[in-house]
Image (cartoon, rainbow, N blue to C red; front, side, top):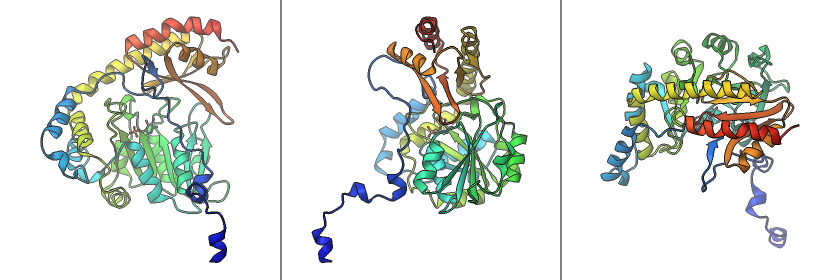
Length: 370
Ligand SMILES: *Cc1c(COP(=O)(O)O)cnc(C)c1O
């Protein structure tokens, strides 16, 4: 006891769990808060959300709703989304963005000495979630054609840890590529654990995996309102799984993980499927125009099923292109993956934003060779 009093007290910063001290923390894409930027770096929707959202939010703010705790299960949203998606409300769990659901899933399924499996290159947050949980993250590289190798279905990691959860973003980021539901169902049957299909970009693709949830108790789909419904600013996402799975996940979430404003906004957004269809058509048309124009400038561009395109250029440094664009107030995402390589991920903006980018790119390319 006495020696404790004499020794210098350690700061709270030094007393965190070793798993936390060891990590750098997830670094989100740049979000400049002032100035006039053409922002094509974090896959936000370039259009305002459905006008029904503003009305719903105004109604929540006008009454006494904000004085009370919100519905812990966001039942209005679940009923609305269930009818649109052809599932039941018991199959839906809502979250503070789909990142919240990914956190809940990792906490629910992966314990000490066990592993999370994810493909790479993909969403970098997955590894951060495993690191925070203090579990292994088994990153399996995509094949060159962005298909998954057989190793992705193995029950153990190379280090001998049992795989307790697998997450596959579909469409994938940064590639924008889509795996077919057949391939993912086969994978789910092979894996010893649940398979989460992260469909943050699912509304932009030709197919999705909602049907798999009806077919398999092993498949969990996560969705986000941030991208396809233009609501990144309110934070709302949801998971779709069999009712028994949802019941378990509910135990792990914060009691009030979604607030009254975001529940009202998300419910109104999902009710307006005409808005979604028009927005999807606009984004897809601009995406195809952007891809074609980039190819004309010598970029290799993968056909995208999302609201961004992944491109590389053999004769130019991707980092230099990113920096030269930034100097012109245009933000794209420079992505670098250890042991794999780098490239540029460009969000599909409005036609005017894409014109701004395309207008300066020839100049930028003249200025930046390898
Ligand atoms: C943007 C994104 C998310 C997070 O979405 P939020 O609902 O905004 O939390 C999840 N997964 C992938 C692959 C994403 O790109």
